[in-house]
Amino acid sequence: MAITVLVGIQWGDEGKGKVIDVLTERSDYVVRYQGGNNAGHTVYVGEQKHVLHLVPSGILHKGKKCIIANGVVVDPIGLVKEIDGLEKLGFRLKGSFFIGETAHVVLPYHRELDAQRESANGKSKIGTTKRGIGPAYCDKYSRTGLRMLDLVNARSFPQKLQARINENNRVIRSMGGKAISYKAVLVEYQKAARRLRPFIANSSQMLHAAAASGASILFEGAQGTYLDIDHGTYPYVTSSNTTSGGACTGSGIPPNRIDRVVGVMKAYTTRVGEGPLPSENAEISDMLHGMGREFGATTGRARRCGWFDAVAARQAVMINGVDDLAVTNLDGLDTLSEIKVCVGYKVGKRFFDHVPNDIDVLASCKPVYRTFRGWNTPTTEARKWNDLPRNAKVYLKAVAELIGGKISLVSVGPARHQTIPI
Image (cartoon, rainbow, N blue to C red):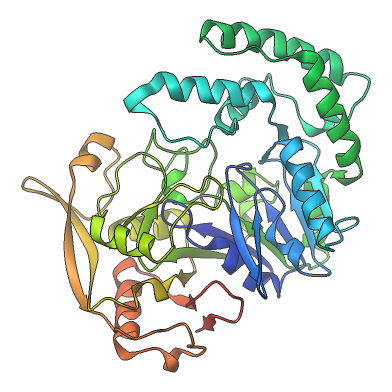
């Protein structure tokens, strides 16, 4: 596999956790390079369900090294809980899990600012998870943030923390929020620092040494292309670069070392939170929710659902430089006699074969559909391409052609064995 970047090419929740778990078999390192614990990657090992928010999914495999790189914003309290939970289940993290020392820290005032700003936005809210991710990135780019190397510096951290809390409390009070207690935060975060100190490392140096040794590295992206701060449906986006380029800036590995980009997409479309979703459809949403599907792993919120959007996926393939595609949740369409695919957008007499950057124009877009016959039979037991119903294969081939990609993997259920390599 050499060096591979895995990205979501829709609005997140594409099933990346499952695909990462499959690809980890052939990887030596698995690396998170952006986002924070607003992400939630769900992996099934046997009957056991694991939802990982910060720790890379590769930790569920023995002998793999997992790294949280510099581009991630880390909630130390949440991370300690995640580590403790994994260790209670018997997973050994010592010597196999590392946290980049220059990754930025999410603090309680970030969460309070997040909640206050979202509340103040009213009907114009973004739909944030209120976990402080955006404000933490704001501090990073305003050069006022604290990093993991600050957190574990027992001598200087108290003073730096007090200065940041004092400044942010003035803002929080002005917004009508509750001020943060310096003493309480200091005690809690010093405790977390002691727990996390053994895992802190220079992640960039580690990754370059691994690459030089010929190790196979898998970069695990969080969220999806249309939540990218630069290329997503702004302002209804996250605060980091979720596209493949983020793997380089978020890890220190240069672009010319990336060998392969895998794009993950559902066989239909979903998104959580606010913002345009041109192919959104109430009937397919009701059907999927009625099956117990499409609820956020992090928030528990019901996802908005729609038909597969080939316009958005085609643009994401282009932006990310996708080499091959992994299609998940094909089994979600098993009961349908007719399946639609969005192949273009219309606004009045204007036709779009790409995603407009103007959010108001995108919100006005009406989908232009192409209709396919469904297969009306379960696909969950399929293990080879030829096990799939004929109409399912027709659908997948058409989707690949419409977006200009090559499908290399199809998932027909959450379990590891419910995976069809192509």
